Amino acid sequence: MPALPLAAIPSPPEGVWYPGPIPIRGYTICILLGVVVAVVIAERRWRDRGGVPGAREPPGRTPGHAPPDRDPAARDGVRAPG
Image (cartoon, rainbow, N blue to C red; front, top):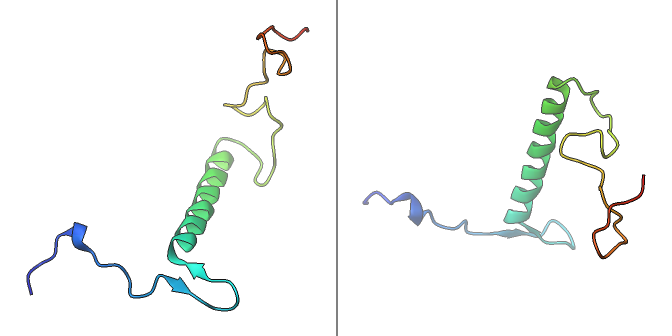
């Protein structure tokens, strides 16, 4: 049998499992696994930077979250008073 290139990996014989009334698809499991891995990595990075494990920081104190400098209700982009 000739060697298959990586682009020719065949699909699994069954992509949907029926453990009960709700079908579970393979890509759903992959997405959920990716979310779990992302949360674990984010928690580890948070702890390494001095954060308390499991704690939540309010918006504006976390890097990347800046409080708005304008009134979100104003349609003309006028800065919020204060």
